[in-house]
Figure 1: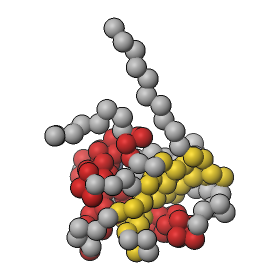
Figure 2: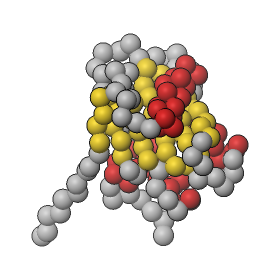
Figure 3: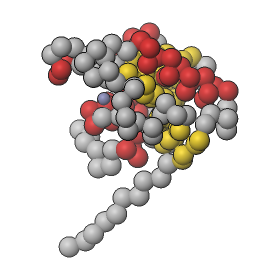
Length: 158
Ligand SMILES: [Zn+2]
């Protein structure tokens, strides 16, 4: 028997001051996108923003449905937005922001398991990593160099 260990490394920022202008714009776009959320059931408003080609930022927000399994996460909506508006483009970064009045959400929220696999698919599709920024409503930001950090031992078909 062999015991193996998986190391997770990410950066934590307290506020937006240390980021470059384009990064700050991405974080703010994700926060703005929370207002495009349709979340009457959970009241958990999630916004995502993706950065293409170093300057183009596109948004997505969670879209809930009375039939819960039909809900779409903000991360998926933003990636679908990007791939429809700019087919074949490379997504360099994604920011995800949460806005809710519920208690216990002062720290960033991570993408769900399905979104992690879908973001990973985009990394495979474009043959490059996507920087991930997770933004809390209190301006705490977690930064990951790739979604692979959040989905170790991921499924891959080939
Ligand atoms: Zn999700």
